[in-house]
Length: 384
Image (cartoon, rainbow, N blue to C red; front, side, top):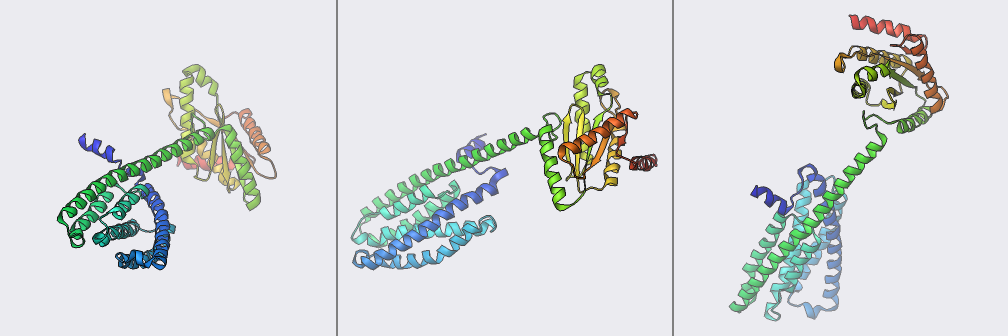
C-alpha cells in the first residue's frame, strides 16, 4: 500500500503508454535543447569576441563549451527528427549527455572566478533552468542534480581559498539542488498528467466516434453509416473496376420470437446473429444492421459465386445454431451485384430479392440462376 502511494506521488509513466509518453517527452526536450545549444553558442561567442577582458577567468570554459555545443547541435537536431525511430538508449544518452555539459558549464562559470566573485549564480541558473524547461523523471533528475553537486562539492575548495566560504557555498548549492529537484518533479508531474489526460480524452473521443457509427446492440455499423460506407465502396469499385455485391437478410418470423419468448430473447437472437456474421465474414467485408432484424453485408472485390457461397454458408450456420430457450431460426436474403446503380438502387435490388425469397417460402437466398447450384453443392458438403 505504501509503495503504491509512493508511486502515485512520483507520477511514474503508465505502463500501457510508457513508450509513447517517453518519446513525446524526449521530443519536447530535444526541441528546447536545440534552442538552448544555438542560443548559448551565439551569445557566448559574441561575449568572447566583444568583451574579452570581462571573461578572462572563464575564457577556457567558454572556449570549450562553444565548440562542444556547436558539435552537439547537429546530433540534437537529428535525434529530434528521428525521435520515434531511434532506440531509447540512444535518445536517453544523448539527452543526459548534453544536460551534463550544461550543468558542468554552469558549475565552471561559478567555480573559476571565485578569487574575484564569490557567487554560484550560474550554477543555480543551470540547475533551475533545466528543472523549469526539461521534463525529467524524478529518478533521472535526482541522479543528475546530485552528481553535479558532488562534482561542485569536490572542486570548489581548489578555487575558493576561504574554508568558511567553501562551506557556505556547499550548503547553498545543496539547498538549491534540492529545491531544483523538487521543482523538476513538479514540472514533470504537470506535463505527464497533461499527456495522460490528453490520452484519456482521445480514447473517449474515439469511443464516442465509434458509438456514433455503430449500432448500440450489435456493434455493427448503423443504418446511416452503412449507407455512407456503401457509397464509398461503390465509388471505389467504379474507380478501380472491381466487382461489388451486397447481401441483405433478415430473420424469418422474427415477430413470432418476440411474441412467444419476449423482446429480451429477440434481442439476444439479433446479437447472436450479428456475432455469426462478424465471425464468418472477411476483414474487408462491411457488416451493418439495416434496421430491426435486417442486416446488410457489403462485399468489395468479390465475385458473384463467392458471394452466393458466403450467403449459403451463413444461412446453414445460422440454421444449425442453438439459440436461447432452444430456439432455432432461419434467415432469408437477397443478393445484388453492382452494375451502374447508386447506393439506394443497389439496396432496393437486394430488398426486392429478399421479398422474393420470403414469397418463395423463406430460409433461402435469391440472386438468380446460380443459387440452386450453390445451395446443392453446399448442402452436400454439410452432409458429408
